[in-house]
Length: 111
Length: 115
Image (cartoon, rainbow over all chains, first blue to last red; front, side, top):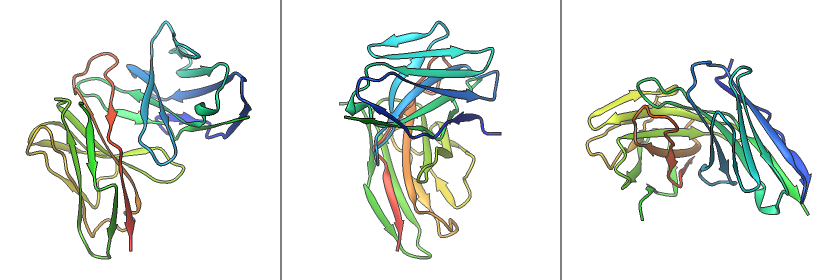
């Protein structure tokens, strides 16, 4: 079983739509969680960290469910510029930060 | 500006040739990482280093080698033993401390192609 699993998509949505992605992780000892955005042929860039209480940054909301071992990303009022692949990242922590990446969920926002 | 640089952007390798990918950071980060990304797949860890003169194998280290002689630099050599080297190679760094919400920052990547 992979450490981090995501639905690869693609999610094809119209502009203005609300879309949500989930990501599951296998290690219950995982300590911190992130969403990264990756544009085609570019490096991943940090979108937001995911806190236990959930957190919001503009149109983006991230939530963590430790009991069920998943994190989610909600995008409201989708823009064409949101089209990208969204990577779920889990940090196992302990005595060194080793990061585990999901394969990514591709989002296509259409006019 | 602080950041991570990788060079070259594109690299072509001939059969049996070793090639070296450069990664430099001026973020004063202790930890550095090399990942490989194949089309439609996630990032896989090749090597990582917590501190100067120390590095550890990741999940797919066979056919690769690294060095960490300076804090700022973590070059990756793709040896002739790596039979399928065509991929997008990403270097990253982090402060390296096991602290809550420690994040990782990436360089722009090197795309390696085999001739």
